[in-house]
Length: 113
Length: 113
Image 1 (cartoon, helix red, strand yellow):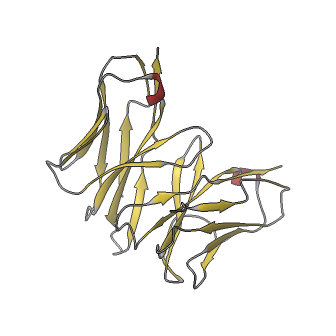
Image 2 (spheres, rainbow over the protein chains, first blue to last red):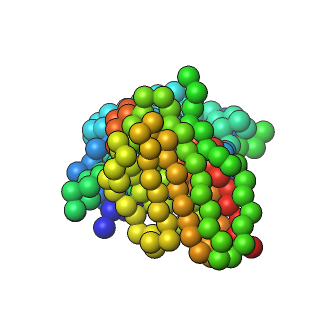
């Protein structure tokens, strides 16, 4: 069964304290791995798409990397405005041949000033 | 360009009633997918439509149904509402099954009382 596991479930950081979020996955026929940010009461906001192992993407204080079994979202010198829930999702092909997007349960990040 | 628009934003219904939610995708996007988000289960895939055809379906009962119109707008219907259907319902659009990534709307918050 296709699975996406995010860890930790919640993380508290001090402003400026860098850390990494992990997303491990099992899926057949990986088409892409997505990272989203979600603020309370809003829909997920797209951050990155990664397609192949070894690929890296950067945006401001965020950097996403991908291996064959997991992805990391590195947050460098975070600010309070980076506080949000970060979601990882895998776009793959199911055993039945259809495509689907499978989400992890998210990681709630709180950055204290 | 306009993003993904979901209406209504909030909805309160009584058990046993039915409800219809609407999603207008980004102009030019032909794929619309629906998700249910709850605190305990996270984001769960409901179904995906492409060019008016349902291409994929998640593990939800038949009370959950959807359709897509020729202009790519989509509706989701839930019949015989149960308390457990209370959730944030999110719609996402893409050029075609994840091509270029998925863009989410702000969601419809459904409360069943």
